Amino acid sequence: MQIRKGKDRIVFVFPLLRIAVKFPIIHFFIAVKPFFRCDTKGKKWEYLKKYLTWPLEAYGGFRGLLFRGISANWNEFWFYWKTRNSFLQPTYFSLFGLLNIQRCDEPCQLQEVDLWCQLYELTSGKVFGDSHHFANPRNFCFCDRKLRMLDYGSGRSHGVITQYGIKIVELFNPAYCWEEEKKKLQEKRESTV
Image 1 (tube, rainbow, N blue to C red):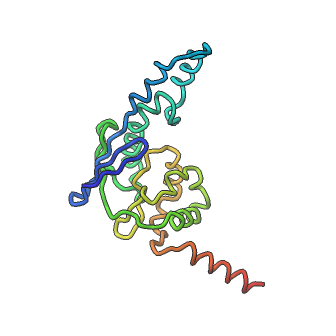
Image 2: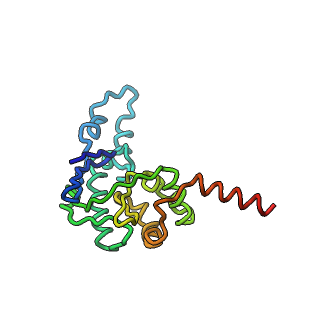
Image 3: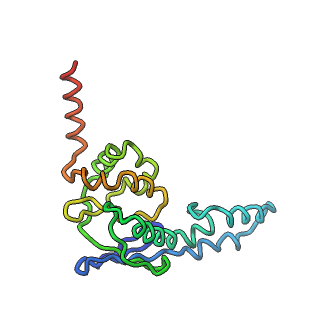
């Protein structure tokens, strides 16, 4: 068993069973801390009002600290079952976002720059919309030498996946090296001069 911890979720990986179990991290003590903070300037209520109304996606807000992991789990499950996109690592089950069971395959061992540059090319730069998820090799795995995305709970990644997911699965080259591609481009430029 392996344990991987992110900002909003903790994952228990069982390679022999080929499953990963994802639990949300609920930052309860951090979320309630502002309610007990001393206020010397009389603006505590204004701050608390903003703090309570920050959107779920905002990490520092009350709702984000408590529910972002649950929301990511549920979004992942729902998006997979709605689209069945071949770029997504299957999420088999979700208990209302409190627990997800996902298939486990070979971890992605690519360098960050190689992964990012190839995804950037394949999506015409659209990966910038959610660079946090698309730039990290830990968010991907390989199944039958095809790239699959593990962490797709953010709604920002859904548009890219819907538009380019199948293209990525079909055209992604696991042997891609950005340094070699750069050399080829340089040679091509020099030969045209």
